[in-house]
Length: 356
Image 1 (cartoon, rainbow, N blue to C red):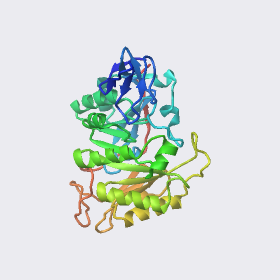
Image 2: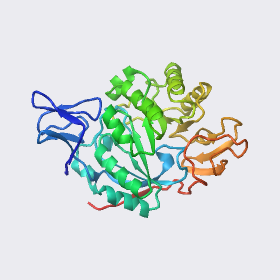
Image 3: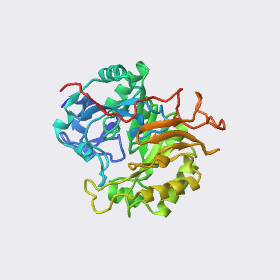
Image 4: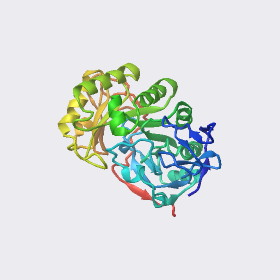
């Protein structure tokens, strides 16, 4: 595997090197890999092991990220690497996030090649996803810079578990993000995710108050773990107070996977209850996901209640926004990034090969 120099690390007095990309602050001796599997200590420095290597490329609908208020209906070229800096027992992408198999990284592509291929495929953006761009920060940032040079947008799909300096570097070339807010208690993050809540909240506050990145939130609701009214009330109240009413929130359904199989699949009624609670607390754009719920997946005007963007899974129907992103019924702006009429990519998924 090809290694690449990294910036966020420092040497320790005992000869080890500490990775400073995320709050784990892995302290490694020569040849050791970090918890994430993506970074290791080599020649007295921290290197990125998977630069230029991906677990695969695919053109997806932007709504799959999920992003409902960012260039709706357009295609996005998605890719990731392997490894993760969290240890979520319920991981839905564990085959990539927990992989330590070099064959997982079979697709090779330089940042410039990715940007050119995305443009050739008619994509409007490139998404750094599947595991987490925090893990492959340098690869993601270099690719994002190459994409911007060709007029493409960049999307980070992340758990937001990143340290301050690396946080600034990651989001500097990003235009949009979906941040996975996994729950709203320290106990849940510690016991179920192997991390801490506060760094994620810091990332969200940073995005809201110190960047122009459009971002949306996703919370996977796990019955009996993070779906109580009390926790959802506290979470949505915090979002309103610290991030504002216009940040879209996606409640998605869990299915038993990886190491958390004792909880049942999320009932659709749980998602609807969470959505109603969030709306009562003042959030304007709240969605249900991983279930067939056309009403919960569509965008409605918070002022007059008119249907703005009809969605059936990833397919768009009625479009009730004008060219400036305002409700055609009452003229109220809809928060987001809208550029004229929607795209027509639909629900297609197109695997993209770059060769081994």
